[in-house]
Each structure stands twice: as C-alpha cells, then as structure tokens.
Length: 192
Image 1: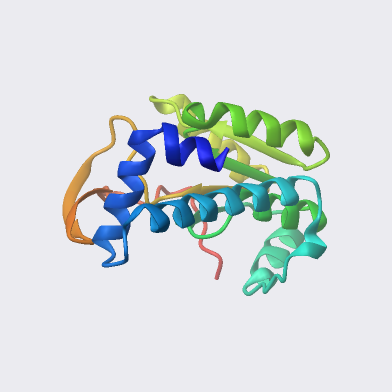
Image 2 (image 1 turned 120 degrees about the horizontal axis):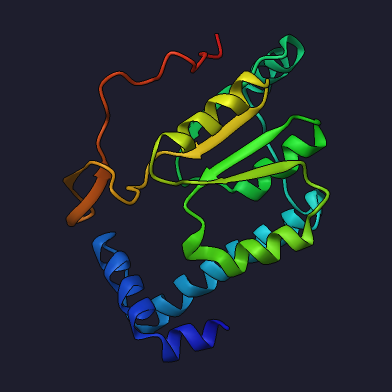
C-alpha cells in the first residue's frame, strides 16, 4: 500500500514533498517514502485501538478526574481538540471507562477506513455524528450533552461552508477556522 502511494499517487507524493519542504526537512524521494510509512504506522495504530489492543501503547492520561466528576453528576460536556492524537484511542479509553462518547466530524472523505474501524470495534460505545449544514446538527450535539454524554470534535479544520481566515504558516498560506461571536453556546458547560 505504501509503495502504491509513493509510486502511483502523484498528488499524495507532491503533498508530502511540499509539507516536508515547508518544515525545512529533507523532501527527496526517500524522505517522502518515510513520511508515507509514518502515515501507514498511524493507520495501523488506529486499527490496533479499534481491535482493543491497548496494551501495545503507553498511555498517559491527564484531566480524566474532570470527566469522572461529570459522569458522576450525570452531566455531559463538549470536548474540543486538535488533530493531535486519535479518535480511536479516545473511543477505547471512553469505552474502558464506560463513558458515553459522541465523535463529531466530516467523515465522507474517509468512508472506507471509518467503515473498517466500525466493523472491527462494534463493542465500543461511540456514536459518530457527521457534520451537516443547518440547525438540526447543532441540536443533535445539544441533545447528547444534555443527556450526560461527551461530544468530541476537532476544531482545527475548516469545514464545508465555514468561515475561515488565511494565515501564514510553515512557509505558506493555510486556511484556519475563524471564531464566531456568541461562542460557546449557552448549553456548553465548562469542566470547572
């Protein structure tokens, strides 16, 4: 699979080379191969988490006392993160601790891997909520939080139709989500 992307997927190869160049790293063919191999490792890690192979990982957890307190109080929360880490790891840890978890995202671009992961881990108590335009989507999130569940979303990506701002980063222009006034909505309860 890695060989395919390196040899026969010029868009993936160009994206890797451009990213590595922006970081000031070597971006020759060998470096692109290593980058694609790292991506494959991350995909395998996701599969191992989905299969419940937690013992393969060293996990350090901080702040979980806040989540336990919310669970004991029957309160939910909105967890906002960035693309550091793994939803599968979060799903595994939530399932291990019997914490209801909803993952919010735009999953249409990764249907195949998400389908495989769902089939490998049907035991995980996780609801996937796909980002959709309109108020119905926001009401689903509100409903889950009010039901005492966690709603996790990664807020470092620009969604379809979202307001955005272009910033200079890594030697180029990057689109980032733009904050909204009136955020957070009144139903978001801080973990204090």
